[in-house]
Each structure stands twice: as C-alpha cells, then as structure tokens.
Amino acid sequence: MRIDTTRAILSDLIAYPTISTDSNLPIIHYIADRLETVGAAVEVMVDESGHKANLFATLGAPRDGGLVLSGHSDVVPVTDQDWTSDPFTMTERDGKLYGRGACDMKGFIAACLGSLDLLAEAAKTRPIHFAFTHDEEVGCLGAQELVKLLAKRPVKPGLCIIGEPTSMQVFDGNKGCCEYTVRFEGLPGHSSAPEKGVNAVEYAVRYINRLFELRAELVKRCPEGSRFDPPQTTLNVGALKGGTSHNVIAPRAELAWEMRPINAADMEFVKGEIASYVEDTLLPEMRAIAPEAGIATETIGEVVGLEPMDDNAARDLVFALTGQNHAGCVAFNTEAGLFQSLGMDAVICGPGSIEQAHKADEFVSLEQMDQALTMLGRLASART
Image 1 (spheres, helix red, strand yellow):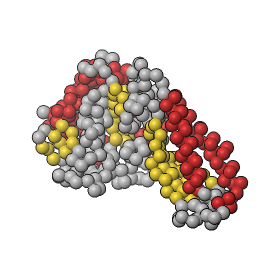
Image 2 (spheres, helix red, strand yellow):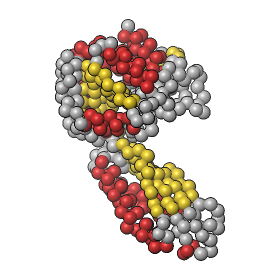
Image 3 (cartoon, one colour):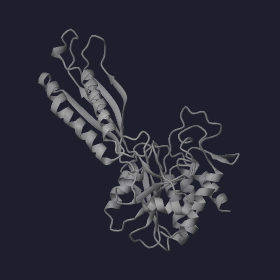
Image 4 (cartoon, helix red, strand yellow):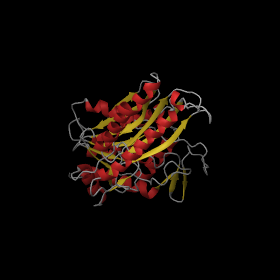
C-alpha cells in the first residue's frame, strides 16, 4: 500500500538529524536519489559553506505554468525537550508517527516521495517541480537563495503548494517575519554629568518608543476586512541589553525586535520611518556630543508574507483536490510569500498540526498522511 511505502520513507527522513545548525546534505542526496529513479531532472544547489543545499527537481517537460511542491528539510533542536522516545527514530503509537520533523515538515516531503509514480503521471499534463530547502527555521535562508535563482530562469512555474502542517486545511495567507538587531554605541562617563556622555540605553529606549508609535499607526493602516489574527501588522520588542552599572553612562546597548507584516507596504513603511528617525533625529543628537557614536542595524531575517488574493489558482486547485471551499490565514511564517514574489499563486496545505511542531513528541497521524497522499494522487486527474 502507498501509505506503507510513505511511512517507510518518513522513517528514513526522520533518521537524518537535520537541525538547522548541522548539514542537510545527506537528506538532500537521499531525496535526489528517489526523484532520479522516476526520471526527474534534479539539481542540488550547495551553498557557499559547502554544508547546506537546496534541491529543485522537475518531472515532465520544462515549460511555463508548472506546479511546485515545496517543503523545508531542516528541523528545530530537541535540546531540553523531554521526549518519550528517540526523536530521530520514528516511532508509531496509536495511529501516530512520532519523531522530530514528523509534521514540520518531513511528513509532506515523505508524501511527495511516496506519490512519485502518480506525480509522474500528472507531469504529462504540466510539469511538477519539487523545491526542498535548507534553513527555513532560521530565516528561510535557503528559499531566499532559491527564488533568486528561479527568478533568472526563462521557464516560470505558475503555482506552488507549501506543505506546512495545517491539518490538511487550506490557507492562502500568512504574515511575513522580519527580525532585526540594533546596536547603539554611545560615550561612557560619570552618571553625575549625563550631558557629557551619550547614553546608549537611553537612545535605545527612544528608538523603542518610536516603534510603539509606529505600532499604533499600523493599527490605523490595517485594511478593512483583513483576515489575519490580529488583523494588522505587529511589532514586538524582544530583548534590550546594555549598560554596566548604576552610576556609569551606558556606552553600549543592543536591541532585538521583530515585525510581522501583513503586506509589503507595511514592511516598507516601518523600515522607512524608523530609518528616518535614526538618521534625522537620534544620530545627529548623539554625534553632536560624540562624533564616533553610532547606530547599526543587522537584519537577522526578512521574509515577506503570503498576501491573500481574490484570484489564486493554487488555492482553487487545492480546493478541487480536497473538496474544501474555504481558505484561512495563518499567523506563523512560511516560504509561501517568497514564491508569490516570483509571480506564482501559492497556497499552504499539509499534513499534521502546527500545535505539534517544535515540541517534544512531535507527530503526524496516519490519517493526515493518508489525506496528503489522496490530495497528491488526484493531481493526475485535476482540471485547472
């Protein structure tokens, strides 16, 4: 049975400990070997480190309008998690398959590999592509490199299904995720003469206050009928570190903050406003006292979200494959928006629940895997 083959593949995939800090090359080569057995044209794209790779493969004649099946190969760590069984040995209990990455998102990859014969049949109508990436969990690093390469190619896929764990429900929107670390360099001195120094912590606090002002503006900018929860773009101050003691003007501070934009316009609005505040207000004041003072921003990750669209052929395809007629929006970030940025219609639908992702005893149910296999198996007869 197909489910048995897929279960064995998932066991193999879970056995690769593809934590983002480690290489994913072994699992990528495993996937490549399986794809090549059905005649797929496979590209393994190794990054500059030589330890990470994306895979892009195609079944069928390369032409515009193909469908991409997308998933990430990396998983989050298991450190300090209390697992009932070895997280890198798949264990079956009560109709559930346990292991790190079982739902996020090796279950979907296994379903794709377990359906290759049917997908090869579907590829006679239109090309079926496979995009399996590295380092999604730490900023969608692999997918960002992959879409840059795809953007340069003459043949453009038209649709993309991202198999993140949604309990096989259809989602056509997710917020983006932008993470920044801002470092403030001031001028230390005795706290009794604050006017002679540049207090890095104080300027970091003023920066934060400006973020709070922008957060209020984002509520006003929220489009009517937004389907996100909460509906507007959000900002979060995650950490602030700085200073040395009670009586010393703080020479340095470090701020970590993030933004979850509902659209690209909000992302550019916040970035532009905070950059202007730094250049026009904070830095001139700091450097009037200490010319060497500075504010440096490091972009940790900047991933656009999937903007819900009235016309979305990928969503409509999955409706046809699953029999559903409603799409929601998810709060967590995915690679979907990156594929949308290439002009592709994208949708999120995959086996397993996000409630199990990143936790001890992560699992995907056999029922969910069977639903994923059914969806993929219907591609050969789909009419869209």
